[in-house]
Length: 241
Image 1 (cartoon, rainbow, N blue to C red):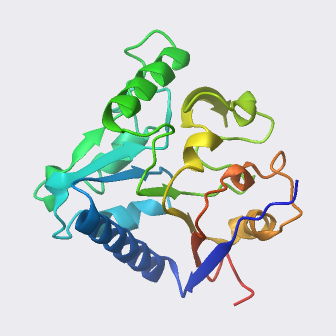
Image 2: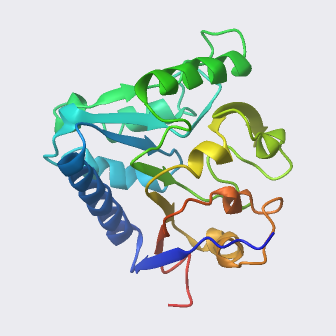
């Protein structure tokens, strides 16, 4: 299966200009969505790269009261754990005094439930209750890219890659049990943006952009929306510019 997914690459000089570009693009997508819809539905990613972008985004005067924020994946740890994406957001996007605190945020319930599978089922129900369509169509899904080619918590060699029916599934990667959007849900979005920084990501990014690369080795290839995927990268991650 040769991927027909198209990528638009925007390269920033360095990490800080990448954060600025990302926060501006997210703002732009939210604002244009709210011209046509009553609510903007956005899925955010974890990882070190988006933290600076979220810190900038949280201060922007967007119509946050009409924004619904979700997580594309979460580690099955306590939400106060530094390993959780919830913790990351609370220390960047949702800082005290930020206008972004007006947004509705749907965290993933984790260790208070009996298993990652239950967490996945509960989060899937939350999604279905908040979206009309099947599969739910996010206005924007923001994704990272691991140096191993994973995105969300879809890791090479994981059973989660083969889940085609559910919207959310449990999985495992890098020593953590996880809850993740499936490729079906990721590919239904109106806008998909990859945020990629650092020289350790060069190989994974080359593979992502290679039409003949297999999704088994580079699971980020499973994300195949109808629209062009925007790749925001810094020069360290995409040195050919």
